[in-house]
Image (cartoon, rainbow, N blue to C red; front, side, top):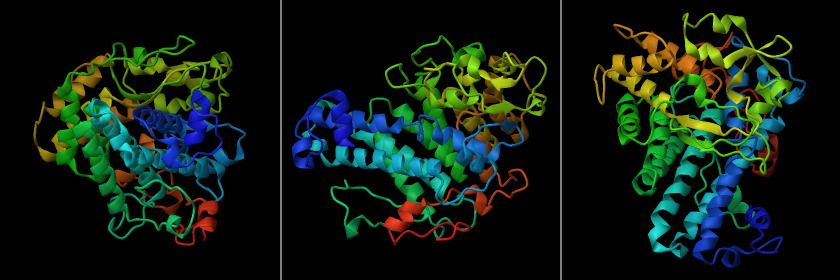
Length: 431
């Protein structure tokens, strides 16, 4: 990973470098962190895979898949084999990011003192984010049985310098992985220059876990920071200029995409040929029928030149991939406060109406959990696997499958099982 990053930036003309030679200066530590962000943006990770694959697994009722990639079709069909290359690549890219952040943290004392805390915070933010999504995808849902018994993913907190017996790490429990992600994100929140990024992921994590008190606290931190504002109209959050566009005022954390890096991989599957994509995903008319008349969020669903219904959120070939944006924080705070019968930061009614008003809809006089969930569904559709993750935390069926079906958990990649006899496979995938 380090050599790949260094080669790209033309820092050291080596194919392989020992760690004690590779990371010597403050600049080396910073470049290693840049390398972690680079790996984070790979197409099978936060360049699109983390967002796309869970939606393919869980949103058959709102989209129709016409793609020709067999292994993505396996995900759509909820029949993922243990050698599926897409889920295996997601795992590999994720652990490359983790190893890169571990290298940063192991050498943090070499960073200049005035930037050391922020660099450490960013590294822990990335590691916590990745561990959270790994355990959501490769482990059973937090509310499915006992998280203190159910297996999550291996936790590795030191750089891997050589592959030996110590590299063969067993899977930690779901609870242990959640706690590691929380610890990393809390440390990041305390030290990085943009703590609201860590707060946003913590809010999402606590909501997934069913810890509404802390979900509200973290979402309120983001909303109270004053760092972000909702973009108006809704469609302006997804600009299509044909080139790179900087983050909007609503974007909390996004992966930057430029013409030098290649296209937004969500564009590949969601956009039609009119906008540089393959057009593999067709939106069902029945999904649009859920929206209220006058809902401006309908403006991001349009017919292409072949008269096929598409979502245009990803039409910009070089648009950034959004990981978290402000609207989600309003909805997390609203749901948490409603379930707790509290009004931390603001009332659930005001938070939900803020989202509705931006969408051109009138105020609700009263707000129920069903109202909040409907707003989540319409506001965040196709942006981050919310169809799957919300179904799991709410114990809802996914198509004909119950939320706790083994088919809704990704298999531990076969090559990892073959390389590490200490890894146990998930139920339903053999060994």
